[in-house]
Image 1 (cartoon, protein in one colour):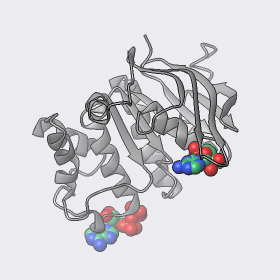
Image 2 (cartoon, helix red, strand yellow):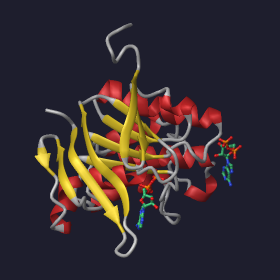
Image 3 (cartoon, helix red, strand yellow):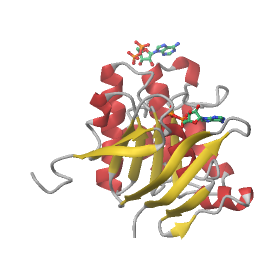
Length: 231
Ligand code: ADP
Ligand code: ADP
């Protein structure tokens, strides 16, 4: 059983002019793997993340998360299904400006009905290097720190699947390295499965598998030597 399976997933946009964003994509991601998705602008990377996570319905095909089929026909049920199983990290951080670091990490899980222990929250914030910034608001943090808050928020419930859309796009290379190391640790230490869209080859090198999309299809892929059992 894989953390994520896509079976012949297709997705088009538009009524008059139809754009094929995903064209018959099949994919299996085992638990505890770190996959990067690369490809030119418009190749379907965001659509892949959005449909695989159930944020957008696919037109055809099947999506299985931990062996269970994702059903987007009922939005409430889909949201409930995602909870605790699927986490997101976006480039734009999406932090709530009026809340502190502590509240930003703790509250979404509480509101979603998956309470996380305060001690565990504290550990996660220490781990991302923000243990001394708990009472600061996002505007008081650098871009890298804000991104680390967003990652802490995404991993605090330890979702089996973590989707990250350009998580390092707004960061300088030192901050990007921190964020990527953190994602790698989530994979190796907690067995989380990470799928990361990136334009940056340096970022992709942290993954153990790199998928290349073009025109809504997976046209190529690379495995890290260890992942392929060569090293
Ligand atoms: P990428 O993330 O690789 O840049 P996207 O998944 O955003 O690619 O887009 C894939 C294709 O689908 C592109 O041609 C894009 O213009 C189109 N597309 C994406 N979202 C929409 C939308 N909401 N409405 C119409 N077309 C869309
Ligand atoms: P970085 O190099 O980490 O991207 P900066 O050079 O902007 O960030 O900030 C250096 C340090 O000063 C960081 O720890 C950051 O959180 C802190 N800092 C920056 N701006 C503020 C602010 N307005 N209030 C409190 N701390 C800040």
